[in-house]
Image (cartoon, rainbow, N blue to C red; front, side):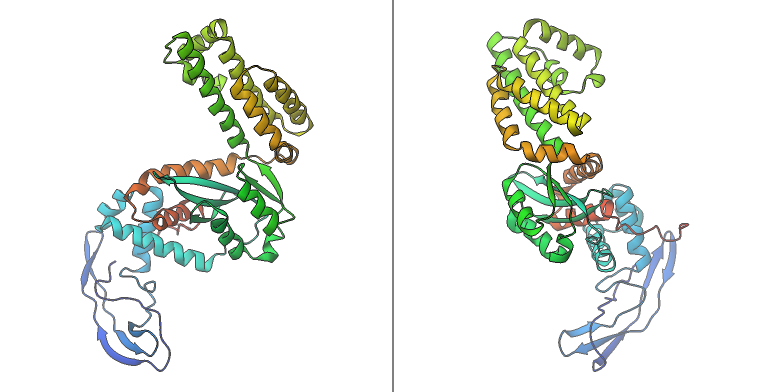
Length: 367
């Protein structure tokens, strides 16, 4: 239900002077014409000027009722934004504005930073030109609890400012990538937390090194195999028949690339087994990579050795990245829609709506 002329200001005090009264006009509810009639005074506030008094059926600053906005937010969270625009007969920007208002209301009534013990810190690119969001995920529940534009210590410092010193002391584990500025800030603001290196990023380093080996060796040999990239990158159980054949051909004709492939798989196995066994496998992997005569993996071994203590923390504490990666995958899908947003705030609002537990129930549905 739209409120075409009424703005729910929600400001003021008992000394306000009543200016005039607005009467609602006709709108629709579904396909049924609906009229909302109410006396809504505009008042003269000494601090904020002329504002409209708070009304019980709409959020402050809204042009739509609570039910309309909750319906719009629910549709935005469970379908494409175009579905909400067509069904509710509103503009695309109106949907984004409503989502931002619903999320702001949810953050006022729900403390997303309460009870945090184990968190994950990630940086996600949302636009070309090195535009990033820093996101914090509750590692226990998988919920997104905080996000802001930027990728530096100043941005992450805002999270710890909102968290507060007392709650920062309660953090036991922080999962992150190899960014030194994250490690330094976590040690400063949450000294009791154990820093664990994200397995996803370590394996990503190996994939990057593997790609360099593949390009170098195949260009040198003059070989063109369109299946080689995915044959070496994908997990073995997920290979197609053609990719298995390509991998067998690589094993027979390109020993350097095949050894690089085995090194990548061995590093994945380190994080799968975890614990003391994982430590032993990591030691063996470091020795193998250092003596592999593959420059790309020799350099990778130096990087892994540099972060070995943080990798040990990951192996010892069994910090799985499954839940947080599910959130990251969803956020990356949202970033594809972010090109229509004029600011990252709309993307952050949508992310908190869908992954932060702030989506309201559909009005009229069973609880």
